[in-house]
Length: 71
Image 1 (cartoon, rainbow, N blue to C red):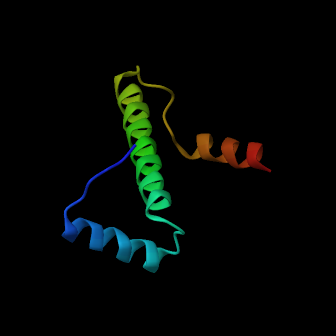
Image 2 (cartoon, one colour):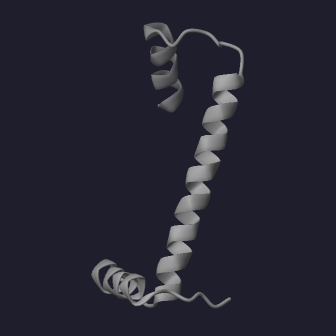
């Protein structure tokens, strides 16, 4: 896949590669795509949660049980 960018965007990408320690512009673009995938997945999960029926309340008892399970 080849992507054409105007000079201003190419300069921006080159600066990000240098400033953020990426080896190549391809690595930078892959990282952006992964972040977008993560964002879309999180949005999907949030929408699923919003559409689901209410669960037990998250009160102090809930958090105490959670702390015990975490130990």
